[in-house]
Length: 190
Length: 190
Image (cartoon, rainbow over all chains, first blue to last red; front, side, top):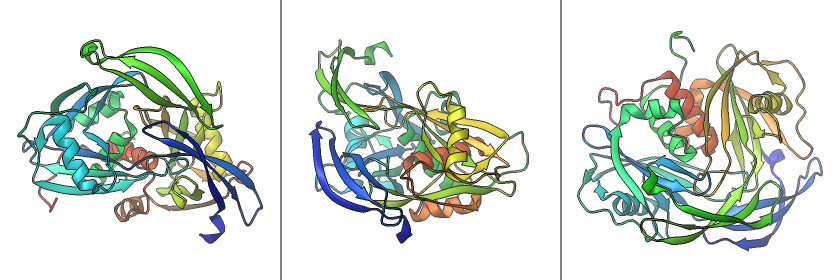
């Protein structure tokens, strides 16, 4: 693996955009001698949560997203506060955004949203037997539509492109891979 | 859904970082009257490819990624050139990065890498019966280690965290959801 590593110079600051900062780093590959200035995006870690009710309904929400300028079908999630434990952040975000709580938390996995340019990680959790125990208290300025849908319907939403948030797809991918063996089944028209 | 939409002002330019640009947009929610300036990241569409050989080995690669400062286990992929068809971009990237080609292409899905702040989409493809027909010709400055591994091993790599690139996880999630029904199986220690 050592022959793949690049030698990195000092971090050069870019600009501060609030929810992320930009930076640059000069890099050189010791083998080929190639040199590049990489552009970077720095942000805090994120969490998202697949919360399932006792009858396997997913706690979901719709929210307008300015990146794609569309109302997006999502699961609860958000930023990990400085010094906060990711699991605590997941419990907090589920409660704040939806009013649901759970006493049965599982870790689905940790992924890097975009290793090429972003430095942060996304911590994905599964919360079982989730119940609506509180009123939702979304952040000032968050306008959310919270509802539940059957777990089985997620697949149809993915196939139709109605669920297209990559970090939500990744979480359901981790869940599916936890539940099933990844191998090609008997021929069925794939 | 209309009650979730924000009213957006003009795009305000940020900075040009080469592989992405930043911008801002002022937004107001017509209902609550909340106002925000959103920070945005603009980039071209991306593609990635799960290429399976005739014996279900995945064409994979390792590459140093400056965002996370780690050598990352990935599948082939890259940027869609201006005016290029995403499927053509997928064929081009598979060939350039690995030397593999396929005549049996399937569309796995289109996802938004980060709808909250990014405007672009990732087009995920499945290439069956992939064969090493050419020499790889990576871009100047790309240092790649190309190899194959059994599809079944992907699951272990995901569980151990060795495969943690969210956009690769999303692609395998789309594949798993294409192959299996998403419902909780009989109890098995979940």
